[in-house]
Image 1: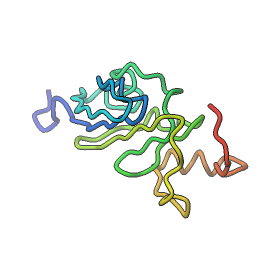
Image 2: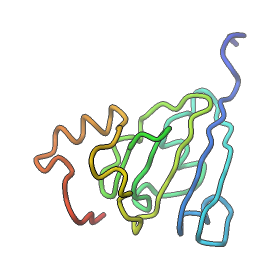
Image 3: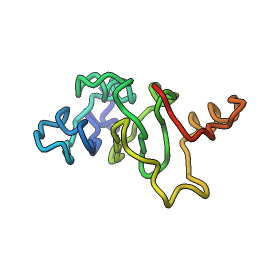
Image 4: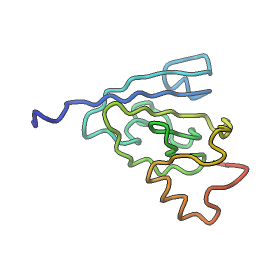
Length: 128
């Protein structure tokens, strides 16, 4: 084992709305979970697997404040998380935050996916 490589990384996860139950909350408002992930299990898909949350149930997703997924568009499944990262999952019925209507910072996977779409992700309705 490499002594310079940590045995686990910690990722802070926030789940909002009905997704809160995946974090152990029954209030339908929010849940906070600190996950310890093995270095070989640090992709977004690994977080979803740990939470037992199907990717289709999440709406807007942010990693460290950068948009990484939105309803029906989940290019972040292979995104490699780092120690100390913060992930926020919003329910499908969550509205697009007003402060992002004039631009949003995105993870590189999301930017690439948006560039490949004819509508550039600009829709008034997102169906999963």
